[in-house]
Amino acid sequence: MVFLSGGYKVQIYDNIPGQASGAITEIRKQLDELQQAKMLRGNLTAAEQLSLLSSHDDLQQALEGAFFVQECVFEDVEAKQTVFSEVENLVTESVILSSSTSCLMPSNVFSRVQNQTRCIISHPVNPPYYVRLVELVPHPETLPAVMDVAYSLMTDVGQAPVRLRKEIDGFALNRVQYAIIAECWRLVQVG
Image (cartoon, rainbow, N blue to C red; front, top):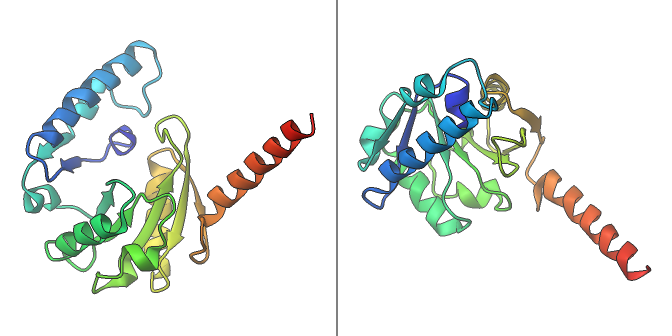
């Protein structure tokens, strides 16, 4: 929905047949509700945004014409590695491979990818449609131009990207949030 709001064509894929088309039904409902509440992001109507959206049960079809692939599977490093191994074999060298992981290190997520210079973590804050912060975390081999494209794309779709210079455990956002949560618990404990 975030990429649609920026006017980008979005092609959804899921390895469970019918799951991607079911997602479109839910997205249609959410976009209509947002439009009625006058909370729809971007300059396009809900119908115009939906016209940019398609679902696919075939990964190769879903990747046709892509310049940026955003993986959004559950937080399992092996699942993410498998996705990127499959995706890398179906796209050109110029396609950016991005994971939405909130905690897994880029060097682990992309360890099976042959060309790691195009790999990046784009860690959104949930829910990304309402909380615009997105943390960009490079793989140790990520080219600066890849970071620039990801930053520009996220800015273009209305997000507020923050660049990390290198990968670190917990990224920056989680580390700051954990510090705040820990202090809140300490304050409660002392009354």
